[in-house]
Length: 160
Image 1 (spheres, rainbow, N blue to C red):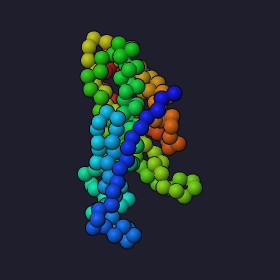
Image 2 (tube, rainbow, N blue to C red):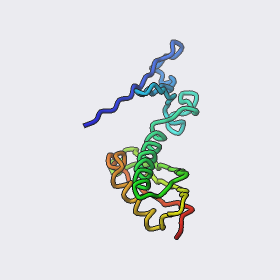
Image 3 (tube, one colour):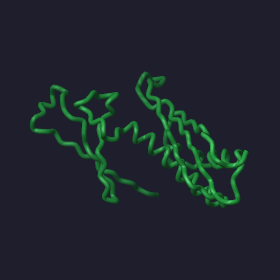
Image 4 (cartoon, one colour):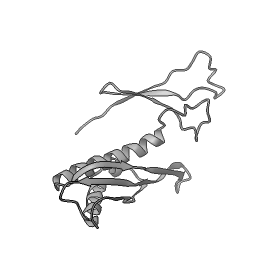
């Protein structure tokens, strides 16, 4: 068993009344490696100036976490198959809507990985699809979510 930690910190500014609901949602996420990330409520959920547009919001972090997990598995499985990956870019998106219980949630997350391969042994489209399928089945984050998760294979420079 593994355990992971993050410290989420927020403090009220002395100038904020708080009970009028006019307070900053800006806060920080601190991780064990020493990185601290500015975070906030999404500007789509809480309007500025009470949200911080330049900060990462939980919804973006969820999408990035899933995309990152899928990519890391893909890279590991491609290396095991002796396919050289030069670049992996994913323009992932998430759709927030109400679920069957009427609660807001991320109802769909779509990954759109574009992979560039190098070397003499380029994978076929079916081999790339198999790598994505295996990555999705093994992704810890995907296995932790109830949302529909779609991987739209955006393509590569490999052979068809």
